[in-house]
Image (cartoon, rainbow, N blue to C red):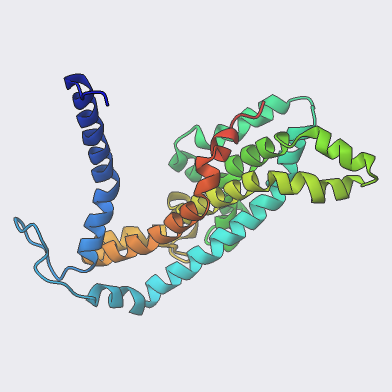
Length: 274
């Protein structure tokens, strides 16, 4: 057993301090939200709340306006994922398997929606939407959300399709399988983990989208992220804390369900297509 030197001890100490700092940075806001969500009041300089209550949760669940925001979020996010998949997955397969003029330009151009300040982009879109009568409509909101998911739903599945070994597809065709059967029985199952990562990232991007939704949909259609503006300004901060916890639940749950694919490199590989 090697003796612990001062250098090794210092390295371990630095590692522990760094991990503790990261834990405070990541978990600190969640702990703050959780404590405020159950606090009656919390006055300075008290280190703990003055009392505990479930009142703020009942305020959120009994508020029809907040309930409508929850239903809107749970409607728009799945619809956005479905529309984005129908549009982007065929494009992802084409980017993966075919060479055509302008392919690289189109791939790089997919990042254009994230290369500029989003509010400026949404304001420009709003002027177009006014002319097309898409303001304060479900279709207008879905279009805004789909634009924010194009990168995830194209790049990650394209890389997933590219990672499927061609020799497996050729072996299936040699065995008599047609192109459609090869895609359904060989290509799609092997690319599915990457597609699932794209679906999760697209769902989260839609579920958390606030600026474009507020500009295009308010006040007719308010989602959970856009409703947070009103909560912060017009409600006690305990109510905003409860709603923020509810807003984070789908994100945390989906990331936990797909962590083996994301931590296994599927997310990083999704941006390595050439």
